[in-house]
Length: 193
Image 1: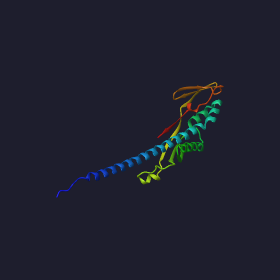
Image 2: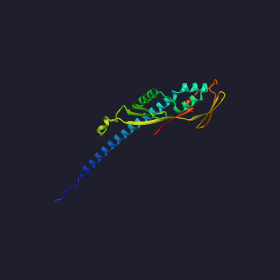
Image 3: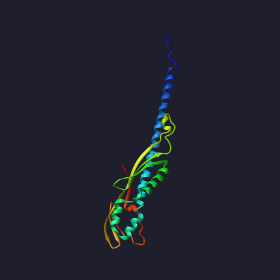
Image 4: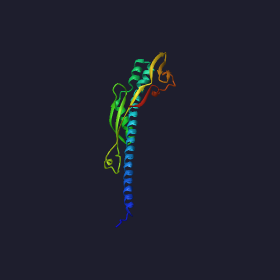
């Protein structure tokens, strides 16, 4: 007696479709995890840059006073060390992390040069998916930003101070009525590895 094979392809078709749906949901979970991880890295990058920028901005008053007083010793020290208020810098990092839906776990000043390493955790988990652990898993990321001097003090000629900078020489008269201090002329703030 011969058996009839009709109808067996329906079973194979159902199994194949179920496997494809499972793979689609698994890829969706991987995509969710990647989006959450990228969000965490964005929060860490912006928090580290905010901390370093705040560190740079904390020297504004002292830098302007040293410029107007022509104190080359203080100017040299400020160009090498930038700001010293780690609490203010870490506060700025927390604000930027919060704006990016993350929380700062660590704000660590770098040794030897101005800058910070920031570690954040996302406030929200990866989300619901076919992978059970994603419901309670939060993404973590770390970033480091530094403040680097762009200029070194050259010479002083009366009220005019000359600096040798990355993009050429800079001559300023801090006692001029129209003088405004832009610290980005003297420092760069950048992410580093």
